[in-house]
Image 1 (cartoon, rainbow, N blue to C red):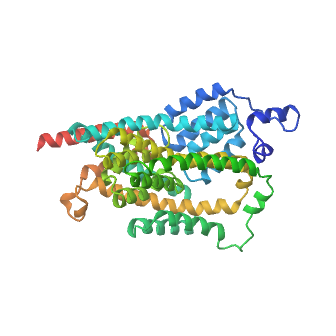
Image 2: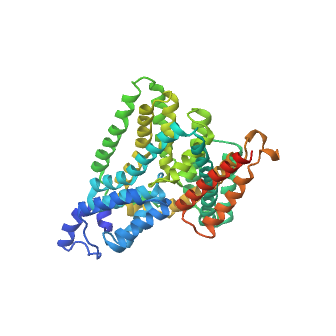
Image 3: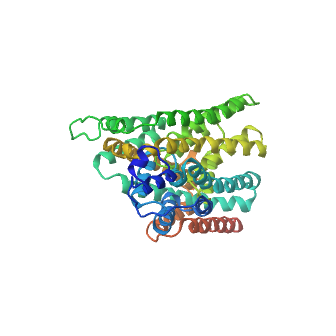
Length: 452
């Protein structure tokens, strides 16, 4: 796509007409039929393992290198914009590319198919989890799975730190964020808001305060107020109507808290699922009492084994919330999961459809980019706090006796270290390693049971 196209909210279909009239230069891209794009988005939903890095690589290889549906520049512009947003960047990138190719319907198809296969598989796994988790062989399987998650989160912390902490100031921000969450257990949204605001107002403390370019850039863009008004009205309706319906049902207070919680969570998921999980765990375990700490880790393990965005683990939380509140009713638990999924991803679609036409204006703001650098540094601290919480949970048989050697699970500590080595040094495939960890955990508990 072209800057003129983006600034005026012009769809990919309208771009063709402009090129015919020589109003835009041809960027050496080929048009994609809606059916061809649909086939790709459907396939992507089933093969998008490996987290955002792998998912973004698959999209780049197909839509830029092989199919040449969009240019390299437009792909990178779209990616940069998605990185600035709360929510799963890979899913938002798919939605954005779908919009570039075929407008709103293309964005909807791309975004929904990116989520749907993983969500349906996670629903099946969640049902199996609550029905058979107490069966010894299943418990042993999840034992190894949870241990591997401890190592995986350590790897995520290390990778995020290497990418984000490139100055002493950002290292300090990360350390303070860790203390804020892990030690003092204060609300995460306040931290994100503070870092974002601080970064915008004071982008660089060793430079003079300069006038913000955000408003200047946007003011030069011919904003489509009618388009924004119509889009916002539609999203308000499809967001509020289900809310009003559910709060009138039995246990309306539960549905009220569920919808409001997941909607709020979707707006603060900067940095992906690992960053938001400490907040989700604090609220759902200690505030709402929808599930236990170990179940949060089990859910993260299940989320790692499914395609699509890792933040789909929030759908598992919704399922467990409904399962507990409705006394094991699988149907209502499934509805609860659907509601959680709906409100987790709804804002992502709005951000893309509302912001994509004005992407060039937003990306020119250096102040906003620097502010996001502050947020990224804080997110490293949040992920580190999550890693510590998981390590304590899976490495000690009783968290109430952390100083007693007999409570230490030495196998868990050793396997976490092996996992870190395998994923960082040997670069083993994550899904393959999760399977190995599950089998090793099952073998260890089985041998332990025989020897005892």
